[in-house]
Each structure stands twice: as C-alpha cells, then as structure tokens.
Length: 327
Image 1: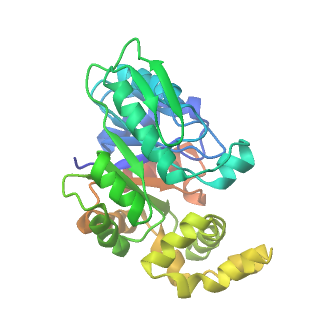
Image 2: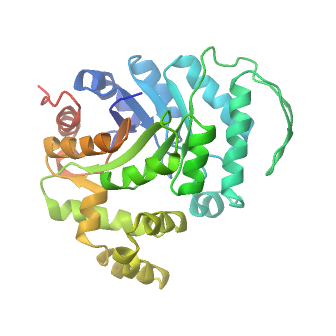
Image 3: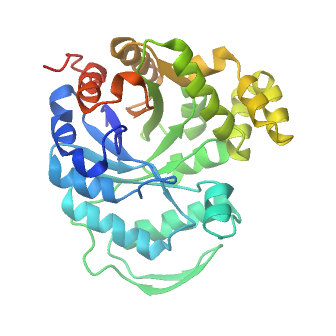
C-alpha cells in the first residue's frame, strides 16, 4: 500500500484550527495522516478530527503505547476511529520508552517485546469480534468482546527498531513503523522484517528551512534527546552508527547535556533530519521510498518558514507529491 503521509497535529497552528489545512492535503498529494503521541495530544483525537474534516485521507496511529492503555481500551478506541473512517484506518502499536511509560505514567516498563506481542494478539482478536479470554505472558484476560467490532479489518502495524521486534512485525502484524533512520538504513530494516508482503511506514523528520544552521541546531537537540534512549541507542549501534555517536552518549550519561548536543556529528544530523527547500526535502523523502518504504510520513519540525498558517500551507503544498506551490 503506497502513499505519502503527514504527521498530525501540524506545527504552528492550534489543532482545532487545522481543518482547512487537513482538507487541502489530498489536493497537495498527500494520501495519509498519521498521529504521534508523546507529551502533546493523544494518538486518537487528531485522527477523529481528520476523519470528519477530510474523508479522502487514510489514517494511522504512530504509535499507541502498549503499556499506557489496557488492551481492551486500545481495541475500543481503534474501533471508534475505524467506524468514522471505515477501511481507511490502521492501528500502529509500540512499546514506547521507559521515560514515557515509567517516568511519566508510573507503569513498569517490563518485558516490552512480550507485552507488545501480547497486546497485538489481544487487539487483533478483539477487533475481529472475538471474545478474548486467556492467559498471555504479560497479563490475563477474561471475557472482553467489542459491542460493535469494525465492519472492515483494521490493519495493525508495529513500531520496530531491532531484529527481534522487526521480525515480530513481519510474522504477526500487517507491517512495521520505522522511526529515526536514514534512507540508507531502510534496506537493513526491511531485511529484518523478512516479509515481502509487510507494509513499511517510516516517520521522517523534516525541518523545512533554507537556514542549515537553524535546522542542524534543532536536529542536534532532538537527536541527543531521542537517541540517548536505550532502545534508540541500540538501534543505531545495530545500524552501524555507534562510533559516530559514542561521544554524544558518553556526555549524556555524565549529565553533560550541552556537550552531548554539540557532540552530534553534522553528517548524522543531515542523514536523520531532512532540511532545505520543500523541493529538496521532497526529493530526499523519495529516497526512502526507493529504498523500500511504502508510506513515508513527514513529521514537520518548527522553522521560520512555517511559523504562520500561510507559510505552513505553502510548505505543505511544496512537500506534497504534486509539488505545486500554494496559491
């Protein structure tokens, strides 16, 4: 399933005021809108709005953490969005991180691989209308059944970084969601998925600005914060980026945050955070597609060019597959 996605909510404009931009997305060449969930909006609310604002878009979550909601609640929320967007919704699940699960929610980040697998199995059965009862490795369930399961199957994708989770995505899910990687890293991830029929979605960070210094400053801060999370650190060691990032990790572990940011090599920033004109960024995103991503999802980072609604609209139009400036 090919496409061209954007991450919601968009920057610079409050979520309730994004209706006009979301309605225009298909006219600019976008097929998909995917949500994210960290410390801002939740994963489902932007998609509920998008489902009513623009019925031509496919929708997806990237991602719903498997620890912070019970599996029955995940199934209920997914079924609700699927009812608003029948045949157009995909559920992305993932383990998330110790910071979000333990630090922010006070929930033990215990056996993330098994928890992700168990929630995947539970939610798939629930969305199919089955009564879910049984002992999973990380929890037990007794008698849950959705009152109104979706009329059409909801594809379930897994956020995956390293071979074990990528392999699980290839075996038991309908696809994988990749994050924080370069286009050149995609073939290694696709090989680990091991299933030619799996849908591959990639969240790609884009800082649409001609000011390279500005983009690299933003990129370094994000990379230092995200890639110091153990799962992402191991991911990039697996990808072969360990020697380039070792100094950053050492400074971060020592609590030297500013030094860690400065230690991020320019080459790594340019690989992981696309920047430049919309036309240049669009061409760089296309490299991910050529490497094996079916659905690239552009995650826009704040820049002076998109600080206003008009600037955001112009940039979105330029980044879309039609590549036409907004008029």
